[in-house]
Image 1 (cartoon, helix red, strand yellow):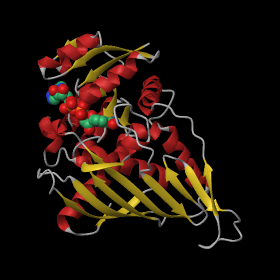
Image 2 (cartoon, helix red, strand yellow; image 1 turned 180 degrees about the vertical axis):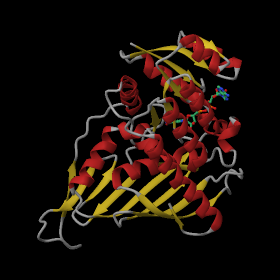
Image 3 (tube, rainbow, N blue to C red; image 1 turned 90 degrees about the vertical axis):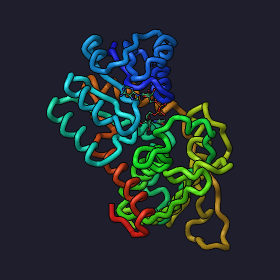
Image 4 (tube, rainbow, N blue to C red; image 1 turned 180 degrees about the horizontal axis):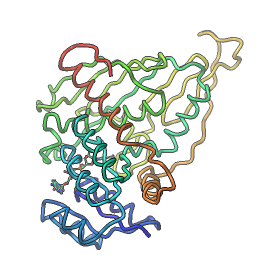
Length: 344
Ligand SMILES: NC(=O)c1ccc[n+]([C@@H]2O[C@H](COP(=O)([O-])OP(=O)(O)OC[C@H]3O[C@@H](n4cnc5c(N)ncnc54)[C@H](O)[C@@H]3O)[C@@H](O)[C@H]2O)c1
């Protein structure tokens, strides 16, 4: 039984606490949050509460820590865990800048601790199946990818200040990074981006809407359309049915098209020509349902983290790998700012 602590008892910290409760490999021994009012969260999860992270690490001597503080604090909190020899699961984005991600890499190497980054969708059976299908050539040569993150965040979401703060919050850094990381995992590396953004609905310093063109290393092209200010059901959150917090629609958020077939995600409808020898727009296509058994990626990620702590599995998402997803979303923001194509 591994002893885990959580740093940051906010919205996502509570999700982690809930999955720890249901995992037989670990138990929650403490939560730290700078805001003393979050003590009631620790009480709800029947665990000890600290306002100081180091005091908690010294008192609990945990096997692992889950870092769920605001993005700009991840690096300092990760360094502190490393200094105390504590393995860690760091929420995404791994940090708010590439220099801060490097700070984590240096600390984990210096103190010889293991770090996993919380791009939990990589543990999704839907994402893993799609990655395997693309790799096995089920679509032929991958040519075109279309991704949408189109939903409406409730207004009270923005009562938490950092979520709309430039260079720390905003939907590209907080949300679209999930999609970008997933696209990298499924389709291969993204090498070039060109983006435009607007903040005309919410009028915050951060964007509420972004459109982008992507170039993948394998030659495929992609488009991304993202907005957290629209009345729309086309996002991973609202279609994948992996988190009951979200309204769930019977829609798709991604489309993958190749020379031999196309896949709608997450309906997992595979489109192919009935007769591969008769391909062309006048010929009939068939729709095949690819069956994927659903599982909660957050719970699967936690089990994986326990195995990472035990040293029986290498981290599925390393800090270096997550830094590449961070570099890609930073490139999107830089392209939107400068109007230039950015090479990642
Ligand atoms: N994987 C996912 O799907 C997912 C979803 C939501 C959020 N996140 C990530 O989780 C992190 C937290 O997001 P959130 O929405 O829960 O934020 P939040 O603001 O609700 O919670 C953050 C908590 O950290 C606390 N905190 C601030 N400074 C601290 C400090 N110095 N020491 C200890 N605690 C401190 C705050 O008081 C707050 O309770 C972010 O990195 C975010 O990107 C991931």
